[in-house]
Image 1 (cartoon, one colour):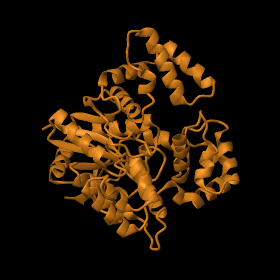
Image 2 (cartoon, helix red, strand yellow):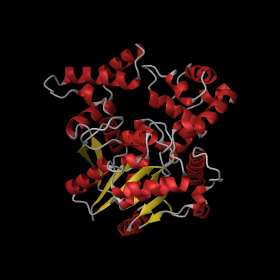
Image 3 (cartoon, one colour):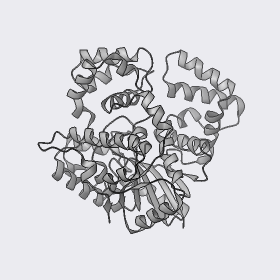
Image 4 (spheres, helix red, strand yellow):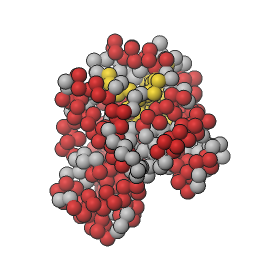
Length: 414
């Protein structure tokens, strides 16, 4: 039995994802596939476009065998923490042979070389990183500059453009997956699949596969039918079912009034205690919260070279979900505490039986059953998933109450 795993968002599942799945199975000769998928909020600091059960159905209908939820405490974090959360959970299943990830490069060797430098942090590299940070550059740009200088000195015959490699979204995540695998001494083998089509955050439609960002943007500014030829028919049907049921897709600006309320009423200490905030940044957030009337304008006026948009968006999502730095650090030490099932086909149900034999973690299929485990660590992390789900549905501005949806929705079984 060979199992290939993916750490995903599927927001929504598109042809690029289908290509990645097919190529991964072909390259690993896998019999089964597992996707660890973010739920209600995403790594870029945004709400999911659609609810997590629709995303799971979409994934299963497109060929994934088993979909498990990446807990909220990791789903809306920096690439490093997002990757760690996914890899740690995947490793705890004790049945996954390969982790396949997309990469603009598609070559594991230079990614592994970069991983080695970032993990070991040689003195010269650390000095250069500190130098670029002191000049007011963002961490990601400072890191790529320092890395390029270090590799040029230590390996002058290298022909790769390392600065360019480390600035591509999927390469960055791939490097973080490799770092996480090394950190926990996992036996899972990494596989890099060259990304085809539009870049991760490309708003334009290329001759290849359209990115999830481009697809969401087109739906937002046009109609659902405008993307019918850009996504697999299974995805399109799922999106149709979703919009008929809930009437609204979800975007960060759907929370404008909530963000204004939070930023104008919370004590400054609540903002200061957010994870990944620097001294003084809380003043910028609060100041712009008074000067502007929607989250887009607030974020536009906070973003600088040092503070990239996605980092600021994540801070606001953490504020929205009441996840502060100290709480995250406490939960980090308790993780993983459970396996949450969002969808499965017949092969996926077999995988669940294998996980049950090989993993010590409790498996949650019906949400209410978490109480039976009498596990405080599990409850602390799981309640953030529930909170994130409740907040997700608030963004849909429904005329009917959409609360406690974790209790009312069951995993999709095909």
